[in-house]
Length: 397
Image (tube, rainbow, N blue to C red; front, side):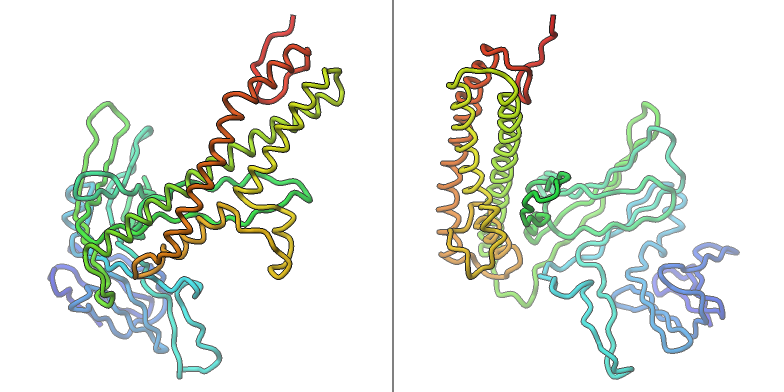
């Protein structure tokens, strides 16, 4: 059986005993391998509203290729060489993250229940490269808001052919999680990968930049992206803005907590190195006391920032200490990150107190960096203690 596209008459689809094929130009057929097995295809339908290709196979199998607009414009794209296809409007909603892959298990009920993966959440950006890039070439794909500010950089392939990238309608994460190799017995801190806040509904632009290998100017293509609000959510523009602003400020607070934790951890490594060196070298008691005092303060700072590792290992009914700054900030970020309502007063007050506590601990860290650590290093230099982490390297004579 054969079907003609509803928009582009020269685009044909055919079902055979060995899969589905399409033709975008005369005398040329290409098999559709978009997760479609090589099976008998008995029916094909182009959805008139969604622009999806629905394929029915022998055995009552159904396969759907989302948005075939790129196939409709493939001839034009092939003629131009580098092409960024139109992007369907995307609706911003809160996907059910409790279901792996967005699929509810149907159980062993045969044809009485059916489940399949949902389409990818977000805006699907499709682009085409007719030729492989020469050595030194590069491809970047960015998302920009109405003011021209870049809100996200997407991973783009440099290989020839058609590529699809999904933008999850979020800004970039506020920070990157560092996961160093840990030693046996070293405490593990539960830390999830952060997510950037959802962008505000509105108009955005996808920009594809292709740079050849030479000194010529890169080519640039743009296409608009419309991000729509959830029609089931009773929030006006001001409500969205208020929620968005708090998500952004909370993300910045998370980044500051992460910076404080990593700085304190690095200082702790320095002091550990110092104490190891002091064990095998003679130094005045004042230097050892300085190192002990700095270590004690760092332990207290880290406890307040990220929590006590010994308490983390206890069950919830045995933990009596207050949540750490990191835990409080991350909890609020998670709570407001996937809701469709204004932040509560409790969430606002929690962030206010966490910000105050964080400001205090950052002040202690900066005091260590600016005064106490340099003073300790000066004492180590005066005592001729061999080099330790964080001290200048000198050529021994």
